[in-house]
Length: 87
Image (cartoon, rainbow, N blue to C red; front, side):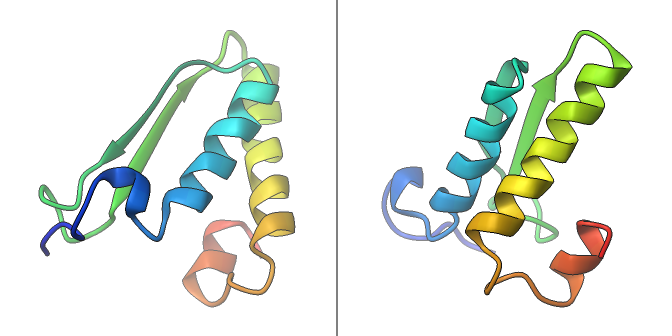
């Protein structure tokens, strides 16, 4: 697929990516990187990579991301999105 016109900040998924990054940052994740991979694959548009220092921290980061995404985008999560969030 082709890239949407304009910079990544104008991508319609930018609010979702910002929510994910903020949630990870609030749980003290490090090395947070959001990559727009639309031109590399048709499977997804963004990949967000974060690091934690322990298994409990990684679990807390993941739980915070799920919680914030559910709260912020509750009306937009359906089908595959719910399955990915474990619903």
